[in-house]
Image (cartoon, rainbow, N blue to C red):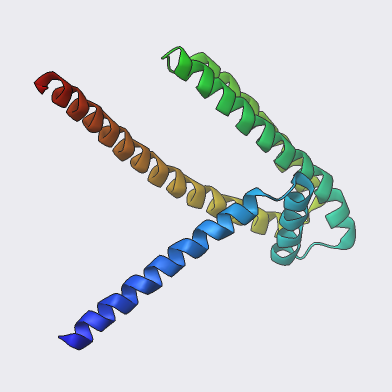
Length: 169
């Protein structure tokens, strides 16, 4: 029994430590500048796709523009959500369509430019990596949606409970 309890304590301590490290890593990544992020992405691409120096020089401005654009879009969406939240409205389908359409156009242009820079074997590996990254991100987004849904239910329940307590007083 003592062994079981000590094992449980050890597992719990390990889990807490792992979670704390994940949070630290996330904070570190968020503090990187656009140029630093682009540089890291290009280096990872170099390792995965075996890019030459010339290809690295060609890819870096594309990735830099992509990272800048992603950050700008993130800020725009944040402001848009804030604006709609204040007015208690949802983001309209037309607005979402326009933003998604613009984003897809940029992705298409990026792919075309990458195809011009990379050879056939590199481009095939690039496509596989991109597909795997999208799957991973989709999984993360689904997790985030579930968590937000749970949080929303919890907050609604909490508000209902508070209202009910105020009425009983």
